[in-house]
Image (cartoon, rainbow, N blue to C red; front, top):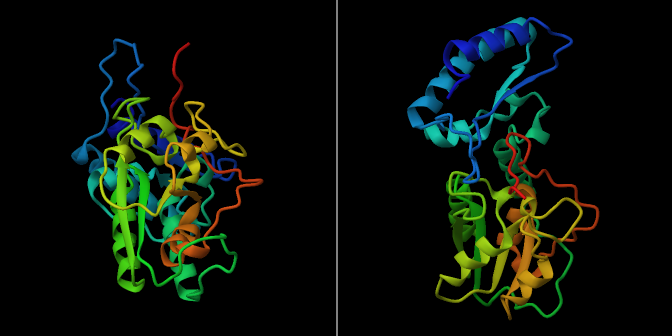
Length: 279
């Protein structure tokens, strides 16, 4: 940790002084893969360090909102996960100007879930040959380890509302980049399959994070195709999920859920570190 403490305060102070030319400021924790060879003893944040960054940021956020009515400064979701705190409310993100950098992704996901739940109507498109709603459904929900508690909480809620639903959250350890990389968008097909093959019990379907697939392509970061992934799970329907609305629909109405991926341009969680395997 090099840029926290007084250095973080200096950065915020200097960039905030450049408003309105500076539109917003994102702060994210360092990402370190197992391929890092730099001998400098760079450390990742722990719970106490993440909490300290949140506390410092909140002081600035309150000041900035008093001045302009906008938060301006936004923290990566990982800080809140590490510190065991809830992500800020929707209004704190000012329309999510840093969403492409993953800032506010969790709150945006929850917002989509809540809006879809308020409508309360499962999707109309049908996947042919699926089980009826009266039969039990066993879904494995693949996630990165950092966001798994959020998915767990929503899955339990969906089970309480949907007779016959059994949703199992599968937090996947990232062997490809290293276990310190814990976001869903950097999971590979091989690591996901390894985690799924270790699990016993019935499995009707698998929900994959859309962000684990390259934008606009049915390919994981380790070059495994979505077709090859599906072939490795015979008799199991595999569907990507993008956002809280998809997750709500998939859990509440699995027989009719289907994700058409044509034209998808999902955020890939790759903006805050060089998550690339060396040649």
